[in-house]
Length: 256
Image (cartoon, rainbow, N blue to C red):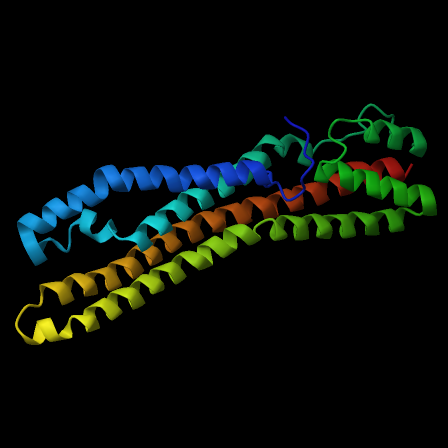
């Protein structure tokens, strides 16, 4: 396990930027080498009957941006999930298990030991430190228990705030799809004269842009919302385990 200096459990800014640029670059290369050539070939040979092809559905700029953001968002969620799984043993650990519970806890010694740990800024251990510090100042177990509750609430808030970028991307993807819809409808209206003259191919292609961008964006949003639900469930489990561990192990040390 690694030391956790980030209670939100997000990657640092440099890593996020690198992954974002890599996501857009790789998707662009895939589009330039596979998607758009395949879509152009299908359109040239099959005409309007090719509009249901997956390559034609994906070929436009809005779909490319949505896919790039999807991969970046999945990276953010997987990174956070990896951190939660990696540090899971800390959620239920008794950090003072070497201390004899039959004897009164040496508060100063316990604080020194916990602060010297490489996991001192981990949310679970930070909760222990805050609770013991409150007990040292007040010598009241109830005040220490209140510190557990406030620390756990703070942990929950930090984890939720760490999901802001993920939530923004999930919101932004359908919006980008609607931008494609507006663009496609605008192009279709610009070709109304040609359609009245009997050539509806241009209007059909533009309407395809309008509907395909929204279709792809909404489908991606549904996928990301499912993964977001799983991540939230894991975060809630972490918060509950941290609280249960403190109430089970820490308070038993302080009651002596």
